[in-house]
Image 1: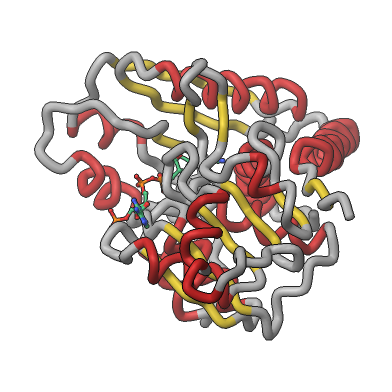
Image 2: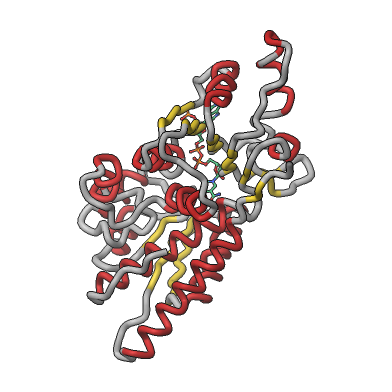
Length: 305
Ligand code: NAP
C-alpha cells in the first residue's frame, strides 16, 4: 500500500487562510484596531536562515501581519534590551551571531517579563514551565512541536497510548516535541547523539511514531533497518509506523532533504515530506501564536486552528 503523505503545506495554507480571514474580519468590524505585528530579528549571512525568513515574511504579508525585519551583522546586549517589550511579538532567527558570550541567555533574561511576546515559545520561562508542568496552557508553544501535533491530529493519527521515539533533544524542537507527545498521553522514548545506533534502531522498532530532528541527511537508511535485524534474518518492518521528518538538510546535489531518505519513507504507513511537511507547519504555528498574542492584547478570542 502507498504510504499516506502528511501534507503540511496544504494544512498550513488552510490555517493561514483562516488567520487571514480572522484579521480582515476584525479589522473590518473595528477599523481603530492596531494591526497585528511581528518583529523578526536576523543576524549574519546564513543562507538557510534567509529561506526560512522569506517564508515567514510571505506568510505575514498573506495574513495581514505588519512585519518589522531587523537585520544585524552581529547583535549585542543593548540592542536586545531595546527590542524586547510588552505585547510585541518577536522572534530571533537562529543561528544568532553575537560577540556576547551567551547571547541566548541574554535574550532569555530579557524575555522573562514578556511571555506573550515570545512567540517562538522558547525563551520565556513562563511558557516553558507551563509546557512542562502542564499546569496552565502556555501562552506560546514552540512552533515546530505544536505544528507536528496539529498535523498528526489533522490526519487522525492516534497518539494516546502509542509509543513515540523522538530523536534529538534541542530546546527548540526535540524537547518540546517529546513533551507535547507526553501531554497527548503517548509513551515517549528520547534519543540523542550518545544513543548507540543499534540501540536507536531498537527504539525505532519499538515505536509507532518516529520523529527525527537530527539535521543529518540519510540518518536512518534501509541498510540500518536491514543490519539491525540481521541477527534475526529479516529486515525491520516499518509498514505500520509514522515518520515525522523534521530535518532540513542539503543532499550531495545541494537539494533540500530531510533526515530520512525516501526509500525508507516508501515503506512506512505515513510520513511528512521534506519540503512540504513540518516546515510549513512551523511557520503557520508562528503566525498562530502571533495572532493569538494580538487577540489577547485586544481582549478578543484567540483563534482555534
Ligand atoms: P540541533 O540543535 O543541532 O539538535 C540536533 C539534535 O540531534 C541534538 O539533540 C543531538 O543530540 C541529536 N543528534 C545528533 N546526532 C545524533 C545521533 N547520531 N543520534 C541521535 N541523536 C543525534 O538541531 P535542531 O535545531 O533541533 O534542528 C534539527 C533539524 O531540524 C535540523 O536539520 C534543522 O534544520 C531542522 N529544523 C527544522 C524545522 C522545521 O520547521 N522543519 C524547525 C527547526 C529545525 P545531542 O543533544 O546529544 O547533541
